[in-house]
Length: 288
Image (spheres, rainbow, N blue to C red):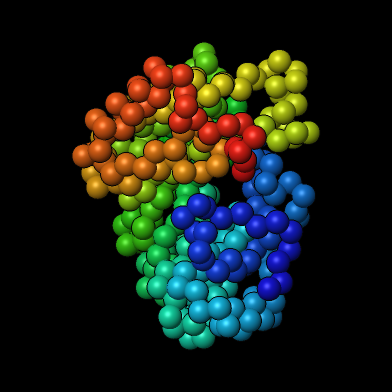
């Protein structure tokens, strides 16, 4: 496979074929993310993608994940060509997924998203991060909470499964509760199929690390992060949604179906906080 640099994918795509359609991130300005800093964004030429699709036919994997950070930003005709080729050459593929952000989603018309869905695009992972516009502005997310809601609803209305990703710790201690509650409110408006919880981590030498070294940001510890997760969960009113914190950045892993598992999950978090944290993931096992 013609991979350019390190590839990232959601935990739920661990068994998927990774097909690199774009290189890097089209925006690449979020303060909290260093994953694509070493890449110059480009849309890969069709001949490279086609070569990878032909090679991938040997593996017969049932799911495909389009990389890099925002493959949906590619022109509609390019994405149609990719999805048609996957369907033609790998008819056993059951679902195609991709990362996306509010900008790339809102650039697509509802009809274009429906077309992509009909061609096999089955799930979109969207980084909401926070429902607090003050926090989104501070960390240069490049979109607002309202735009995140609009983008998510457009995905869901097109028939595509929607997974919203949120980031614990962005509010530090002083704005932790506001961040968690505002994020829950956004998720309640969206009513996502899935929610993926991640925790803020600083990459050595990165922008967020520089803020920490300058005393401009204090990264919450495991107890504060877990309390913030509890506040988020407490304020969620979701129907038939799977929420997980299985990403390696998190201190505590939970996997709950809402609303029915909410009381049990809150009790588990309380027990963990009261019991000294035996369930916490050690720092040396955390990662991006």
